[in-house]
Length: 335
Image (cartoon, rainbow, N blue to C red; front, side, top):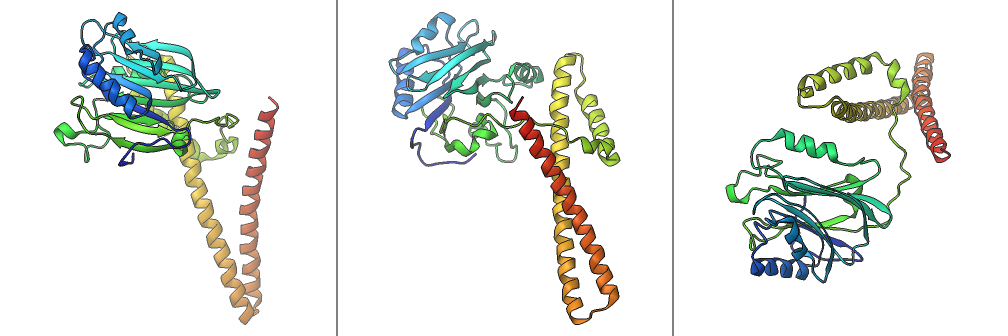
């Protein structure tokens, strides 16, 4: 995450704010927070610790805010809310509200693009069950763009975040497909609460949804080294994650995501080795050509032909894979 000196709107950008407000029951405090958010140009607002009863969330609807989504907890504790400025063209499709006031998940569309907005107030003690339950409710991320924000009550980098009252526990996690449209990330001053607000600017647009779904390259199944690696990774995953509180369906879905990541990593490593080999062979050919220009010996010529054949085989293999990938994409267009 990068820091910026100021928040700005450029050409249709949408400012997203997250703030643990430590209670909104006091009308003066509530007015100050909303004045601050309005003045800052907030479009999508994630609030934690609202401390409001379900019937009191109507107080969050202002003239410039026309959509509110929330989850509440009994008593003046916890509670989260997502508020949207009237200028945001958001059409919601579903809402999941945690009965414990820890999170709210809102799905809908912005410019015909499916989005999942998730605001969390995580427990301030170790609770693996909370995140497992939350992740099990996240919609399909192959069809939705994810924006997850709020008070995580944990830090991502223990070397940078051991500063007591200045620990970064309020975060925005943004779908990597939105990163090129994201700018102006910053923490603001700690003024209206004992938390700093965090803001980012995202330029929502009509994103391309024609990206082909990931598919396993079948040739990998003929690779003994690959099969051995994946078998080992499955065993490792099961040994660490198969617990009585995890359902078989959740374990299966997370295992698929984990193995897909391992396969993508393996393919990346394989591609890196292939590029290195390609460069080495070209350099070898260039070196042999220089030598053969000076000394036209049969042995050099024979070696030159051998290296050339190895290079041709490598490039043919690469071209064949590209053709297969191209055919797969064309087939998907006609499904």
